[in-house]
Image 1 (cartoon, one colour):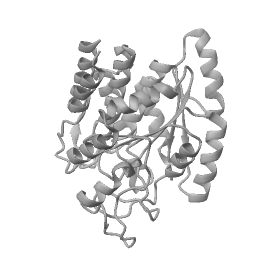
Image 2: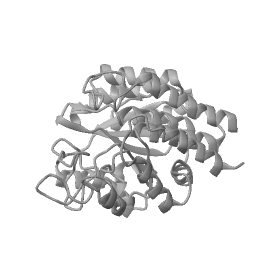
Image 3: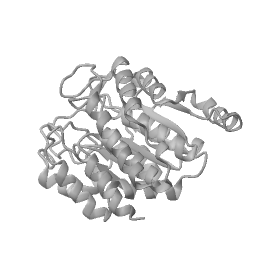
Image 4: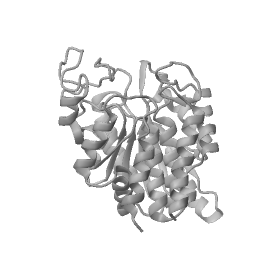
Length: 336
């Protein structure tokens, strides 16, 4: 089977730029040049090499800007749906890392995706019992520190405790070379953001695969194409805050997925895994997508660009997100 050719179609569908986001095509091309094959295929192959049955996987998401409890809806739905896909594909135990204030909203979003959130000290035991009874779809949603020293300590402790097979970020702010987070307009925005960069650093030190998914050039993982971002993206090399060092993150994940909306990058990864395993049920469908987006909005996640708690992400309404999901599923179904 021509996996590269089919993955090209997955990437192409994932890249439909309904938002008119500036630079996304160039970022994709730069990442593709670095990685050599379709981005979703590169990430899917990396995960399949490292993940075993019953693996733990860390997925970090959540981007709060003007208030610690107000985060955008691009990221959490993608993380929830990807967690579901990894649960179906590998019987994985997803542990979702967000800021403390976002835990209630994230738990509600996970439930809508079909996974039941349990405390971290109980989730592995419940998962083991579930394998014997058929009730296996559990997860955990935990907070990750905003304080630098606490984040470094938590990174070591969490990896030691859970031995994850992968660390994935979906629309998670990344530090630049001076340790500053920025929004796409070039302003500092890290006050309410967990320091997940240190978890990525610790994961790489221990040989754990890392996957970054982003859309604006300022997310964790974009260091893979950092030099391109500095040259081509507004404020990439020089931001509008006192640090003056630009929005380009320093962290280079092992693989990177670029999409116009980060959720769609997660959905493309789902589709690539479903393709490689020849199991279309790994990919969620449009009905689940609408349910997840509706619950995310009801739980308080904000649609960026508009600022309302409407079901959608980045100014695109829910029905169009469901169309993207169904088209990705269609590619997989037609190819198996």
